Every structure is written in C-alpha cells, then in structure tokens.
Image (cartoon, rainbow, N blue to C red; front, side, top):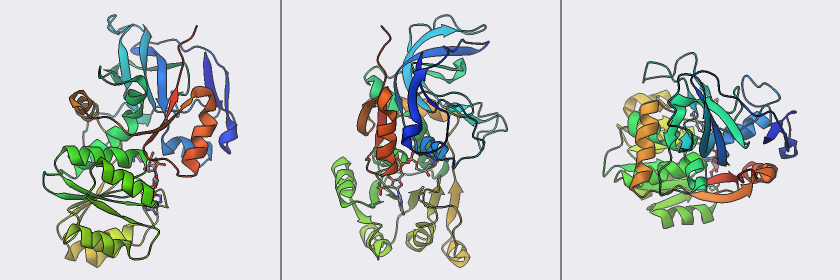
Length: 337
Ligand SMILES: NC(=O)c1ccc[n+]([C@@H]2O[C@H](COP(=O)([O-])OP(=O)(O)OC[C@H]3O[C@@H](n4cnc5c(N)ncnc54)[C@H](OP(=O)(O)O)[C@@H]3O)[C@@H](O)[C@H]2O)c1
C-alpha cells in the first residue's frame, strides 16, 4: 500500500509518501481500505516530537472512513464491503468515567490512517452515516467524540444555556459549536481571527471576541449577560485565568487541551467563591461515539476547511502549523487501481 510514513521528527516535509507493507487482520481485527483521513493537532504534536511515547517509524492519523476489506478470526463475516467510520478511541476500558490502562489513540503507537489501508479492532468499526461523503465522515471521529463528551457527558449542557467555545477555528471547537447549537444552547466564541468569528456567526454563533485583543474577557462578559454557563476550552495556559473571571457563578469549565501550554495559574478563590466546576475530558467511550455519530444521521454536517490528496499531507500540516484553518483538514485517498 501507499502510506505517509514519519521516519524522523521535524517539519511537515518529514511527511513522505512511500510504499509500506499491507496490514493483515489478526483475531478480532479488520482491515479498512480508506477513502479519506483527517488531521488532528495531535498529529502535528507527534511530528514535532512534542508528544509522549513517540515510536518511529509511524503512520500518523486517527481519523478515517472507508470500506472494510478483510476481517480476522472471530469477527462477523458481514463486515467486508461495508462503508465504515473508525472510532480512534482504542480499548477505552470498563469505566465510563475515565479510560483504562490499555487505552490508546489510533495513529500512535498503532499505525494510523494516512494510508490506503489501516488495521483496527473490529469493535471500533461503525457504519458510515449514508448521507455523508467520505471526506465528511472522515472529518468526524476524534474531534467529534471529544467535543461530544466534553459538552454532553461532562458539562451536561442544557437547552437555553450559554456556551463559550474558545479558539473556534480549531477542529474540535467547530464540533463543539455545532453540537451546542444542536442542543439548543446560545453560543459565543473566541478566535485569533475576526474572519473566523464571522464564519462562526454564519454557522449560528451569537457573537465573539478576538483573544489577541486586550479586554476579550470583558467582551465575552458583555455578550453573555453575567457570563457563560459552560466554557469549552483547549487553549489552556493563556486563556484559563480569564475564563475563570468570565464564567458565570455556578458554571462549568471543561478543559480538553493545552494548545498554548499546560501550566497555568489558577486563582483558587475564584473557583470556590464562584462555585465553579472545572471538568477534565479526553476522547470518549464507545457509547458516546455511537450517540455522537447518530447526530450526523439527523442532518448535521462537519465543518471542513480544505481537502488535500494523501500525497500532499505535508501541505495540510503546514496549514495546521499556521493555524489558518477553520474546521477540519481532510486527506482524500483514491481507490487503488
Ligand atoms: N484530550 C483530548 O481528548 C483531545 C482531543 C482532541 C484535541 N485535543 C487538544 O485540543 C487542542 C485542539 O485540538 P484540535 O485538533 O482541534 O486543534 P486545531 O484544529 O489545531 O485547533 C487549535 C485552535 O486553538 C486555538 N487557539 C490558539 N491559541 C489560542 C488562544 N490563546 N486562545 C484560544 N484559542 C486558541 C486556535 O483557534 P483560532 O484559529 O480560532 O484562533 C486554533 O485553531 C489541541 O491542544 C489538542 O492536542 C485534546
């Protein structure tokens, strides 16, 4: 098969298409012929060497959609020929509250989806919503799952509440915007780009503030009349002190990432005096993946920024490095002749 194999850490130019061995399914596994894959910030962190447990060479990629071509022992023989979306949350474990010790994410240490073929546990196959293109289906898994658990399971978002989604141009953030609107919330956003705030408004956001400008916290407070009930954040260090200032008393802040750094000063007094819940969230359970995917049977469409052919994965990474995207960066994979 053809695959983008990362052999050395570094810039996007390290992502080179080469011929790799076709995977074969072991017991309980399936092989999927991919038609599209998608990027996550994780892929860029790994490429740059800023991720735990890196093993090289590695085929990156957590998101993929395609057709099952082969299954191993113990797997339902009805799968081959089925159009599927892959859940990249591997071996979550028995406790829905947190992943277990065997949990891992497709695309490191297991080879991922920047390839014509990928091998995954059959338990991670889900039927592709029929109305979605390959590209749309591939855009969903990791980011959709993360946004869904953060908003629905962790924050328990209620209709009529106000949500702040920070850094709305990000892949997960665009899903958080879509899901929060779908659940009947009023959504405000931050972004480093006024054009991205305008795009978010076109999608249904009530307004936003540019986090590059002083006073963005006050702007959010004005837009939300007492502060958001729920904040969904992955900016981390740079945003967190201001988020604690603007969150409504009794509100919830869900954190699932640290794009601007992890170590942040928390004004503890604000946490207890405002009765704030700070909630951590990562990926999600198989049940959450299933419920999340079902939303796309009911007319939701992921936000795709741009598509690139698999061979141009380096160009897609350059766009992510520059934070130019609004929504998901997708790789299209042509069927083999
Ligand atoms: N725990 C998990 O399960 C999990 C899952 C997925 C992702 N993550 C983490 O979540 C983060 C986002 O991932 P992604 O794939 O969605 O990445 P992405 O598409 O690259 O989005 C990152 C976004 O961060 C925003 N940002 C940058 N600086 C900011 C700041 N100072 N304040 C607010 N926002 C800022 C930018 O938004 P604008 O472009 O609008 O300025 C950018 O688009 C990454 O750190 C990733 O590692 C964690």
